Length: 222
Picture 1 (cartoon, rainbow, N blue to C red):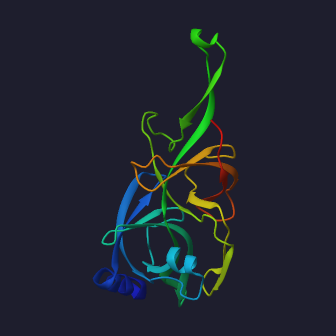
Picture 2 (cartoon, rainbow, N blue to C red; picture 1 turned 45 degrees about the horizontal axis):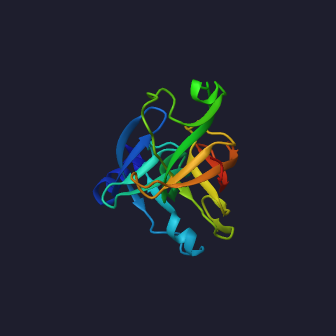
């Protein structure tokens, strides 16, 4: 017998919104149905626009740090927190916290390269793209992320996820990117956009499982 969790999953498949769930660690996508809420109306305009909750299967294949694409709306979200709802000792649904992505990000790292005859063989520096582990070096990868910009710090208390605090100039991305302080984050509105350069000051790896939080500042380096 599938139990109550299975029954609810069947209802979600009939009435829910279809999402593609992309796992960066395995480069695989699965499709599920969720019941989304339109925004945290008790918060600030930023929270209402970019912080969402949704109900997922009791046995969802989604993991923290995955990218969720709402297929019909063509919107992308990071899966940042999960709270299972338990009934009679079994999980019947998972409540998920999602951050809506508002930027594409290209990460770069400064490396030293040998000099040439033109510069008297003086070592030079250049910016090299950062990729997922195992990808071919010639692939330029754009990551989805949430950039908070210059908003004032905001905080919201929620029943399922406790206090949510978001500060200015933070960039939230999946933890499956090998980034560190000193790297460059090029924020783009689209693939064709040249983007804006930001320097990664701090990378928090353990505050939110599955997510890296980057503190950014203006990057004036050449």
